[in-house]
Length: 282
Image (tube, rainbow, N blue to C red; front, side, top):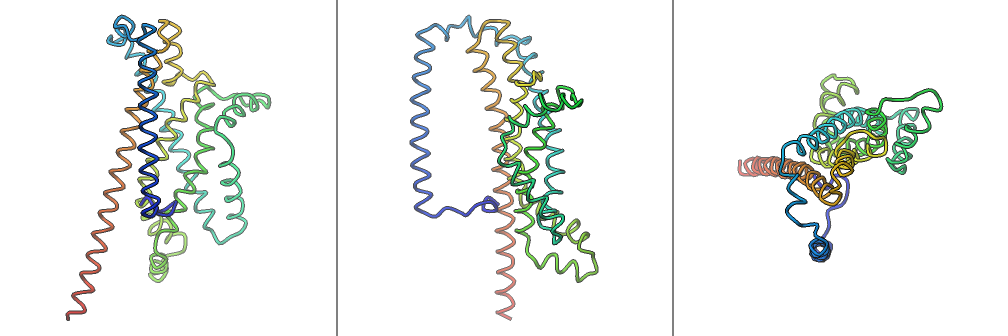
């Protein structure tokens, strides 16, 4: 499943990737050790500065911010996936009037940072009489930005489905639209499910842009909490750990889905080869 959007690296490339990964981890560990040393030297690791985070009121406030983050991410993901499917279908359409605008949207929006879209919704739209609630000031630009990314994911899935699948559906009497909706698109969605989860991880991290519009997501809640208790470093470390746990869990889910899909594909190939052997033996 992972080779839908890029070529599988060869042995030399994999070796370079492993070496770069090891070097990156060593540098990261060195920086972490230096940071811990500096924190200890300045008294930031004292127990009394971390004790407030062993209390329920602190965690209840941060979990409220996490819930707002999750809500914004789920709504933005739903909107961007729906728009992404429509754009992907537009990009593979035979009609130029549909294909060209879809391609133009994807290519244009992919080059625009999500932060710029947030600023456009925050400052430009109110000048034309459209002042959205705080929630939608974050969700709308995220949906607009990620729709282009999901469109490429779904398009890669559609292109990976064997052409004979659609042709067989047409031979059975289905219309081109029914063939795409009932035969090709469900297979494409299953194939790109790990990529969808991975892209959703990026979308979840992008919700931290709610900091700009003062939406009470996790990072903004951490800022308010740090201003209240004066524990700036401790608060942001705790917020970073929460992000780490959530995103690592979603990434593990994506890898699990990828392995499961690869296993099913391997099983189907073995079954096909077995049938061919049986036919030859006969």
